[in-house]
Amino acid sequence: MNYALHKAKLFNKYPAIQDLKMKAKKRIPNVAWEYLETGTGKELTLDRNERAINDIQLVPKFCKGQLNPNIGIELFGESYRAPFGVAPVGLTGLMWPKAEIIISKVAKLYGIPFSLSTVATETPEIVGPYVNPNGWFQLYPPKNKSLRRNLLDRARSSGFKVLLVTADVPAPSRRERTKRAGLTMPPRIDPKFFIEGCKNPAWTWKTIQRGLPRLRTIEGYSEFKDMMSVGAFVQNNMGGNLSWDYCEELREYWDGPIVLKGVLHPDDVQRSIDIGFDGVVISNHGARQFDGAPSSIEVLPSIVQKFKSRTKILFDSGVRSGLDVLKALAIGADFVLLGRPFIYGVCALGEIGVAHVIELLKDDLSNNMIQCGIERLSEVSQIPIFSPSVHNNDRIK
Image (cartoon, rainbow, N blue to C red; front, top):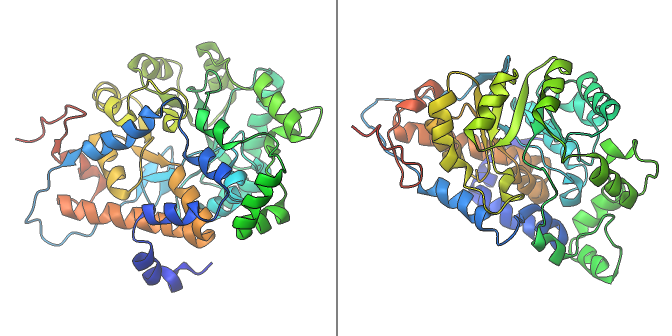
């Protein structure tokens, strides 16, 4: 990949992540697109996430002279070249074969963290060398203690440093839109699938090379290796059992930073601090789990006000631009995770598409920092905020 040769052309042809999204939609089967884009229920929370972020207004201050933004940041003992990273996405290989490998390689090149899901289609052993030392591992809590320990040992020995413990999947969500699209595990090779393959030759060729998506991290624990059996194994043995006692056991076993992912209530943040977790991700799982939840950005200010000095506060859900990243940081988040935008990039243009997503986010973040009159991330708390959503307008004096 030589992104520099294509950068100027790409910035003109795909000036926003939305442009990559439209390109990606044309290159992958409908069932993969619907899996990526879906929420659950009426998808009210899916709309609420983006609408609430869009409602936030940052009030610029001018006459600051020439500004040269520095967007580097330190988090959990590591230095990153941007205040955002790749959120974990399950079944990524359905959207684009070998997506985890492609995205993790580019993430390391750009100095940002990459998070690998337990239900990824590539293993920690495969992805770890590409992303180390910027690897984060997301755990869907296994019910079996020996399985849990084995998963954590594999992640640790593969070079993953930060553990993300997913709290917001107490049960599988209904995701009606995905069902309407016909997603099954394993994917059905029927006439409809064949037609979709013919419409998307690049995706089909890559899938033939890599094989149909499999839950490679988990399949070794299942008695039978076919995708249907592995899917049933995941449903019966993963998730739905996370408790505070379980979290305490994780804290004792994992010797690196631990972050509780997917919390919205201050009581959960407090409890995570009490048991020694290093951070939380304020998230509603990208609106994929519970359609009655508030937007993550509406919850963020109260969490920041109460816990900012006591734990690291990460933010996720609804972020689609560098300006969105800046808004979350201005409210008080320490770091931001994005999932779907990186999938748009890899589906649209492969490695160069992922690099372009990162460049777009960095450029948009830096440009908007200048628009607001700051050049250091330590200054984001000085940006006046006006918002009908988050009720945090007291900075405008």
